[in-house]
Each structure stands twice: as structure tokens, then as C-alpha cells.
Image 1 (cartoon, rainbow, N blue to C red):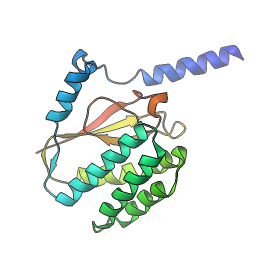
Image 2 (cartoon, rainbow, N blue to C red):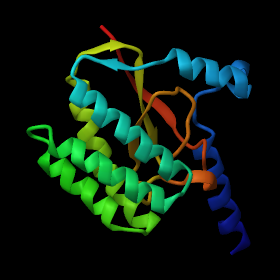
Image 3 (cartoon, rainbow, N blue to C red):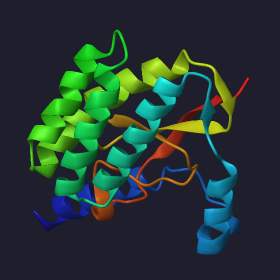
Image 4 (tube, rainbow, N blue to C red):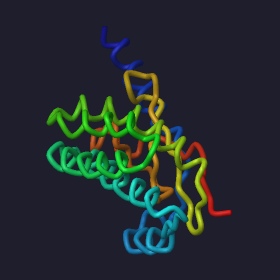
Length: 176
């Protein structure tokens, strides 16, 4: 039994170590903030920019495992999604997150929400900056989960502090 537990633990650690190697400058807090500040995102469509900004606020609340803040930011995101024609079903997912104070439920719904918003932003005109599509293979009981970030550094919204750096950059959506 101890062997099985040891193998399972080793497998989890190895899966999380598959993330891209980080350069030394991303480990320095001051330099990380400078890099983030330089990656300002500018989207031609102001409504899509509002959706993305509200989404990032929700993602950050989940990274911090703050269910109350996730509820608030999801409510704001729901409003910006509802105002964009064609995003009504995604607004309903945001409403589910806003209606729950359970982090597990919020994170589960965040998967579908992220998939919709990733699809929306892949078909938008980004004027400045890079949006990172990130992936955690262990999210959702091993089914995996994606999310968007303005930073290349991994901050996992599916596990928060439990496995903050578990994941990798799967794709970059860049200004054209």
C-alpha cells in the first residue's frame, strides 16, 4: 500500500514538473512585475477587452482560492458577456460561478467558461500584447483544463496554492 501511495505521489510530482523551464528573471518579483507591465493587452473591440479583463479578474480570484471574490468578479463578467451578442450561453456559465460560494463548483464551471472565452479571443483582433493559453493536465480529475493569462508564468486557477505552478503554456495569441 505504501508503494502504491509513493508511486502515485511521484506521478503527480512528475506531471507538475512538465511545465516549461522558467528563466531566472521570472523568479525575481520586481522583474516579473516589469514583464507583466510591459505585456499590456490592447484589443480593438472594447467589449471583448472588457470581457477579457473581467475574465482575468475571475481567474486571479480562483488562483487565490477566494470564493467570495470569484463570485463578485463572475457577476461582473456575466454582465459584460450578456452585453455581447452570441455570448449569452457563456454569460449563463459566469452566472453559475457567481451563484456558488463553493470553490470546487466554481473551478469546474471555470473550465467551460474558459473554453468559450478562448474561442472568442482566438477570433479577435489583438492590437498589442500577448495572451497566453495555459493548460493543466491534472485539472478536472485528469481531464485537464485551460485558462487565459497575461503572464507567461503559470498561476493555476484550478488548484491555487495546492499546485500553483502546475501547467504549461499551450499557445500564445499575439497581436498581428
